[in-house]
Each structure stands twice: as structure tokens, then as C-alpha cells.
Image (cartoon, rainbow, N blue to C red):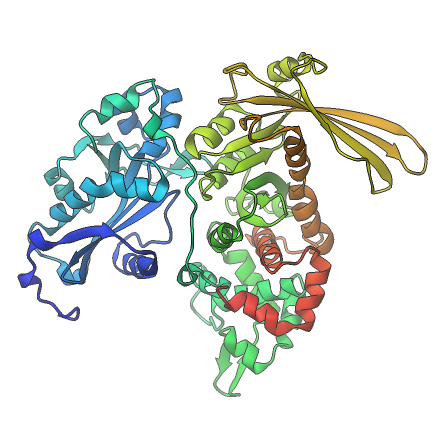
Length: 592
């Protein structure tokens, strides 16, 4: 055989199942993508890779990821209450991929042996990687393709059949007409009772586990663009999709936006630069050729935004972890101008962007009107590892479901602004005696900016457990007063805002709460304003198909690169990359 062994010699009893080492992740991913009928891009949420090895040869691959958010057959079998469900989802792992490699296909009892050994060490390996054990394993089996024999042989329990709906923008509304059989397997004898028990256990806590990425795991933007599916017709296609997307990102780094400006920028690239980007080579002229503006337009219109926005999260996550920044993130939505001029299923109306309080984009999610910004945010949070982070949100997101998802599903803390859209909570916060002796206070020095002098002060106090029923885990309430004086006219005004947070006082005093409250607006000033004022996103005349959404995502990618390279101001970065094109190329082509 090509792998250098005869499968007739394989002794199943000698097969070892172990976690894949970080330097083996690319090989595991490539094999799964090549040989599994579903392919593979990345895990949804947390993940764990297992490999079955015999005398140094890989025989099978097993992939585990976070359990399904909702599944009727499993939830009915467990019998847990909805409030318990959100607190326990992290204790379930889904066997999302299982592959016996072609070289080992047909080895008797291999599949059941590999699955059994993977199950025996699953909880311990998960705890070592993610900081907590597991109680239950689950999987979905397509009855049109498989009979689930290896799961039955490993003592899995069939709990029912799904209804055949896929998740979209946070809700299960897309019918795929392929219901699956669901199987579960307890990882300890009394797991079913323990998961349904209202009482929590100390070992179930989900502490933040630092994630470290090796140089081998970092991917360049050009490599990630190569994994985006090309929706264009094959007839007459010359330029690779990855090349066109890389040139679009490169042009944005140099301050050139729109298909026409991108084409002019690309025409000025020399032959060595076009070759490095993978441009099409004209065999008659013997030269590498830049894509035209019509090609760039077709790419922007036809490329799936869901696939392109994965590039941002996959590129930004390891670099954010390596930067050791303060884990404070802000999220907000921005309407895409002109996207609603063309109706239909392909239209995306809004982008929700997650940025650090320094302004660096981390991930984005495009959404339509179904579910809107609220559903898009909850879907976006599933793409990012939020453990140990503090998430700041405006009053639109002060809802029970969002707060519960942040705390109980993602293991993060929130800082929520509360306004009159939550009348009961707003009235409770306004009724607090903010002049009492148990209130902690802090005031910033007055600052002059934008033609006014502004002074901010905050008062914070502890909350008793379950004081605010809709918001699980709320530990502090705070009031922020902003006093403004017009520098020219002397006219004065004041604004009072309220908020709550799950962060206790010993971790966040009033000064830090005030900094978080102010830092939240980096999503407006550092992201939305830059995209509009400097990158001309709202002024763009690109309106058809997916072009408005993809234009917004590419702007976020360019901003992420700018911040990663240490620039504080976008015009400065644009001028730098325009004059030093080799550094811009390095930012696109290098994994560092």
C-alpha cells in the first residue's frame, strides 16, 4: 500500500488513540477535508482532534466539538429544564467527524475499537485542553448513508430523529430535508441524572484556559483566501479567487477602495508582485496579468459572505491570543448602505462586528432582517473563544437570552448598558440610592475634544444575588454621569446612563468600569467611523449581490491587519503601505 504497511497485518489491539499534537493539526485538517464526505474547515466552538495510530501509521481520525445548542431528542431524553440546559451545554461534546482513512479501510473491528478508545479518554483530554470535564457525548448519523453500526457496538443510545432544520442567524429555520438519527453516550454512569440536577458542581466550572499558537499554526491571509469556495462559473475563469481577494485586501491597505481603484492599483504592481500573489499568466504575452474591474466586481458579488467572514475570525484569533491584550471586547451592528436596494435571499442588510477596546476587529457576522442584530450577535459569539473575556454591549442587547448565552454558554462576563427598553430593570437601577455610603465612586479628569469639555463620573454598588432576574450573574450596578460644556458658547448639558455587569468589585472597581464603559465606543469610533469616513464604505456605489457585505468584511480584514502591524491611525497606515508596497505584500502573504 502507499502508506508503507499492509492492512492485513494491523492488530486492532495495538492501535493507540491519542490527541493530535499542535504541529499535526494541519495534517489532520487536510486529511479530513480530503477524505470525509462533509469536508472540514474548523470546529464550531471548542474542539478536540483524536488520531488512531498503529506503529506510527495513522489509521483513523476522530473530531469532537461543542455540543449542539438545541436538539429536541437529546433534550427530551435528558429531561433538563431550559435554565439548566444553558448552564450545562459545555459538558457535552459532539462527535462531528469520524473517518477511517482509505489505507485502513476494511480492517475488522477498527471503527468500533477506535471510537471506544476515543470515548474512554475524551473527558480527560477535553479537561486538559479546555479546563473542564465532560459528562455526555452525542452524534448525528445520516440514515441515508450509514446505519450507525459502530455507535451501536460502542453502547451508544439512540434517542430519536431530528426534524431536519439547519441553524441560520441564531435560529433553526432553514429546512435541509435530511433529518438525522441522534445517538448519545454517557461518559460516566450517572451522567443523565447529574445533567438534569438543578444543583451545580464545582468541577463543572469553566475557567479560562490560555490558548497558545505555534508559528506553524499561523496562516497567511492568502492561504485562508484560498479556502473560500469560488461561486463563479468555470467557463472563461482566469484569475484565482484567492488572488483577487488578496489584491482587494492589498489595495485597501494602500487606501484604494472600490473595483475601479483596485484595478488601477493592481495594474501598477510589478511582475514579481503579481507572481507572488498568484496572478494569471498570459501564455501568449508571457506576463502575469492583473484582474480587471469586472472580474473584481464579479468576485465581490458572487462570493459567499459567510465563508469570507470566517477568514477574519480564523486570521485574527491566534494573533489576538499571542498579543496578550486585555480581554475586553465590544460588539455592535452597522447598517450596510444600499444593500436593501436589491431584494431577495442573497441580500445582507447589516454587519455585526466584534472588536477589542483598542479597535482591532476580531470577527464579524452579516445578517438579514430575520432575527436582526440580536440573532446575528448570538451567532457571532459562537465563532469566537470568549472564555475569560469581558464583553461590552449597548442597550439593544440587554436581553435575557444574550446575557445567559454570554455567561452560561461562553464562560465570559458582560457589561450591559440599560435603557428604557428594559423598563423594569431601568426603574430598579434609577431607584437605587446612589448617594449612599456603600457606593464606590470615581471621576475622570475633564477632557477637551470635538469642541467641548467633558467630565465623566461613575458610582457603582454591589447587587444581591438574583436581584435582577432577567440577567443571570449580575454582580454590580453602576451609574455614569457625563457633563458637557460647549467650548465656544459655554452651553452645558448632562447625561445619565445606567449599566450592570457580572464582574465583581474585587476584579473591577469604579475606575475600570468607567474605562470599559468608555472603551465600548471604540466599535463606533474605531471601526464604524473609520470604515465610513476613511474607507468610504457608505459612499461605495457597489450595490449588487453580496458585494456590499463582502466590501464591509474586506474593510474589517484590512483594519485587523493595520492594528496587527502596530498602527494607531488609518491614514498613516495607508500612506505607509502605499509607499512601501513590499511590506503590504508581506502583511498579506506572510503568516506572521
